Amino acid sequence: MFDIRNSVDYYGKMIEDYDDFAEQSRSTRHAINSATSLYHLHEWIWGDWLKDDEVTREKMGSVRRLGEFKVWLDQSEGWFPVVQGLTNGSKHFIPRGLRTRSTGTYAEPGYVEPGYQQMLLEIETEPGQWLEAIIVLEKVVMFWQSFFATYRLLRSYDSQGRVLRLCQTS
Image 1: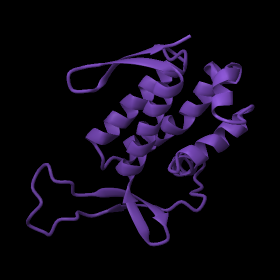
Image 2: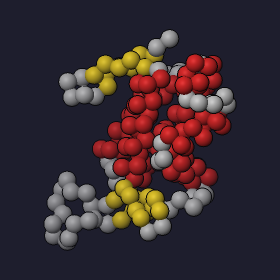
Image 3: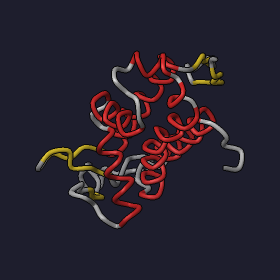
Image 4: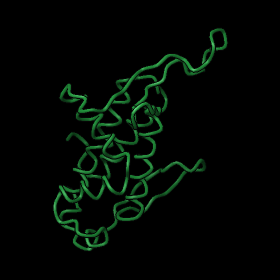
């Protein structure tokens, strides 16, 4: 797809989508784009290299097919099914039991100044329990960073600890 040719390239797209959301955490558009990239990364990983990498699949347990990889992800990162719900709910206009909301400010009137968060995007994680979407998506970003570091990539960092370059290992 254009200049995204493998899972490392798609990983970079996923990071950019998340960074956009982190910079504008009140944006539903950026939240949905970030969730969609976070979810679909597993298909790029599978198609790019994991389906043919028996050694890595053995390290992960009994992962032999894409569906088993998805089960492994659900078990390895508890927020992955929530990200799938956001992705599918936005794509098919079917929330599938996942509830989201945009709420007003958490600060009292008169205390909100430019730079304060005035609206939260939240996901109901359990009945009556709401969590900011940025927190859920960040957890899955961190999972993918760990996954690539463990199973596939060498990384180099800038002085602030941000990933500069991802290099696929053979």
